[in-house]
Image (cartoon, rainbow, N blue to C red; front, side, top):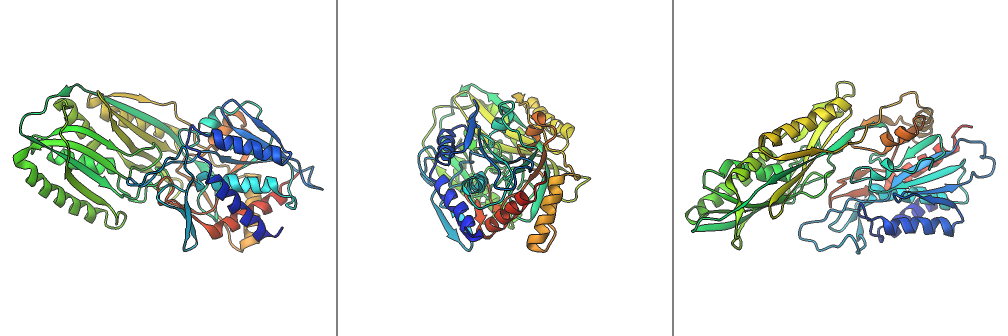
Length: 482
């Protein structure tokens, strides 16, 4: 087959993957698809207790003495959709379209993170005319919710000495390091209070924000819906003797929240005044974020009355802490120009019957700084009387500039495209750091085609870069040493 044929095959496989439900924690169907793929092509495979799948392929003729290379991608996808779209990620396929050279989904995340990485690996496994040494393709589970598959990878699952992670999002860039991360969760427990007579109920909605990846996009200047709504409530809560009935916003710990909603009650005589304040606030925010949030919408509408509200002391403490807590870039790297070193994301808020549950995530390329910002988040919410618990976190991946695989990938890129690739570390989390816990001598890089808007319904894949990355991948495989 020609190179174009194989690139088309990559996209054909991705189209098949888009039909398979694969939310994080529910990878049963994509796992079965991978196992069936191995059986149909008479390839050796393993599946461990966590659900990770490893498919092995022998070397092609004359390449049997080369080192074994691991191609690695994750099975799950972030499941985000437009607020008004009805879509069941557990049963419905991802509908796609092509627009100006980009592959997009229709109102949902595309899942090219990391379905396109899976597709590249499977295209190589399926090939009969690509030169390569021994290959192991590892497909991990639940990467998006805490790198769970990599953390629980069965001992001895892999035998390769070099690993190419296929989960990066910028063609022409080779990644050799990533941030570590930790999730911090908060609970405000409350008792319901009666709402005074003569109060009017309003629903406040902020949506159609850009959103995006809480690592890769944290420095892009996008608004956080939870912070935006929390700020308005902080500025008006006592002005109108307000009552807070509920607050919800965001979804996933690794996505910048795109929408948030609160239900409030205020004295009936103030309902028009607060509408004026809300409209002024909308103008203010649209001015502040005019360059990054061109579609941001603010809505205030009457709603059904609620039987109870959150007790006043907890409501004030919650609103105050959401407004003041650190969010976004905490520090930039002093060693790598332009690299975010440390950040935090106020990811999601949910109001239950007797508690408000908040999920935040912190990232840093310096381990002590990761825990420092997590402690700062903890302190802010503890001062407000909340219960806080920090997760165990996951490690970063320290760059190895002496990597043999990096040298090969750089040289082959220059031969193919006549220019030097960028060598980078990334603020997002990759599974590579966890692999080093069990395989400390692994030589690793991460590459991938250009993706934008990941972890949001604006996720899109630049099609021409699929061809470029796949050509580069094949060139690397051909040059793997003995």
